Length: 286
Image 1 (spheres, one colour):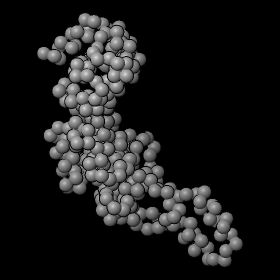
Image 2: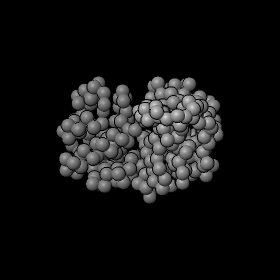
Image 3: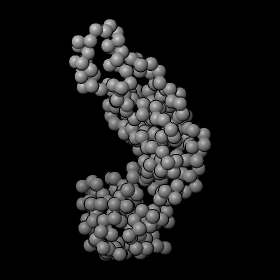
Image 4: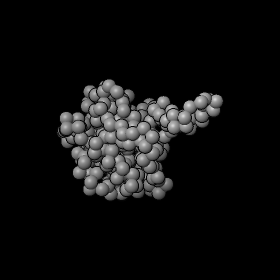
């Protein structure tokens, strides 16, 4: 995975390896911004296959995740068929056939030819329990039934990665179906490695100081704790400002890269100063 620019560790590498070998879905949980979604993207690159993403949200239903009918195309076909002398059943069968089917992520993953794709079911916890039950059924045998066409079964199962931010508890049934991986915030050494890999323009000193400040910020009791995504955003912003080290003024001016809540921003603007920064850098340097 590191060959695909993903800084990994033994638990992550082992979980991904087992998911590939055993062909079992991999459920990844962890704080927002720690790189859960990135694992699916890297997996697709490593396997040299397509990434198909289903973004879950409140109100997502089976039809939206599976397929829809191309109504404009069907209406056009009906217009063209108006003068045709054919039984009604044949006309209906024609417009409810595969050429008029709009495949959504789940059906795309099941019907893809060639190499199995990586199916990313992102933020599955944002869907409701009814959708989760449907998803469990699909993951059980990778087949779906479309009333007008019949049952469609995958010739080869896709690689499946599910991510969750734990906004609600997932069912035991879904958890049993999957291998499980929890991703914690990276320690200092790993965060520096991530920065050096993802933001090569950052100097060694800047990468180390950014990582130390991020480690400290996660202990500040913020309402929304910044993740690795914010680390990378901040480092890229600092590089664009031609910074090679941190000072208190620069940290205050770029806090918008790190915190996304007004209360957190106000609090840090009040406390960040030369002494605050020195204490954080020295504490994590020891």
